[in-house]
Image (tube, rainbow, N blue to C red; front, side):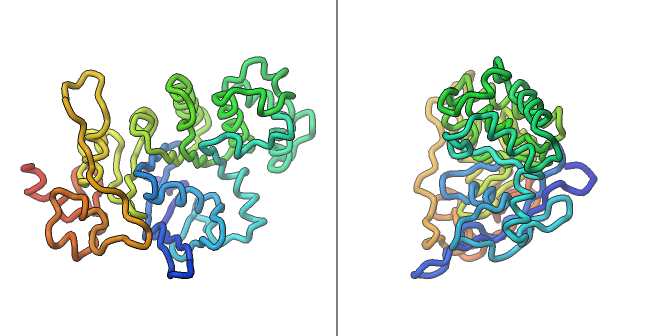
Length: 329
């Protein structure tokens, strides 16, 4: 993190889903910051709260879901309580979005060019010809060959990897300060994944764009992220520099995640396995939510909920993180 004010600041975010059987808390007291030009990786199992946190930042939580507490600030300006029309202007102009399936972001009835040009003209004061020229330049920047010809083609005429490149161009149309990328490489084969990762890194470097990268793929995180936030059952359980969290994790859940990554040059016969499953939203245990699956849980873990606290180079929500017991383990 830089000494300057963060680009994005999320403070004590709480997201609820009212149901007939009670209120389910999907995200509970989540706080983090992202600096300009930084890539924050957000990892965890399905149901951890990663995607819904990203959806809250871009203002796309579907009712009856709601932000029930906390604040989201972009360059110091609070955006979590903006009227829908004003949030639509923020989304696209200041915050771009890239989703797992590019077809959810592209209208199959319109050409790629029409969608890019309309987005550019919605957020920037440009004429038709200027917007088209910018659209072609963006397609070239994200690696679409023969962009001046392909701009008039439809989404179905592009491969999955090329469609994801188009979505990146769409997210960059208005030169946003932040991109929320939700599993942007999951549906792609490994070689295309690597290309998209390199493209994201280059865009951050060239444009100073910050990225919130939501994924369950630790390989993607290792290649892309500057810092990592590990989520479990709607909370951040560890956050810190990517290299430290990957190689020296402190929370037992983080240790399990990192231990499950295969190594090409390693001689480990069996990867680490985390027994059990993520709890349902209506059955989150008391104390630390991870304690039923944790091999090191003590009685305090079952009774008291730990807050994030310094643990080496990271901060971890664990009563034993940084303790003599852990260091000796």
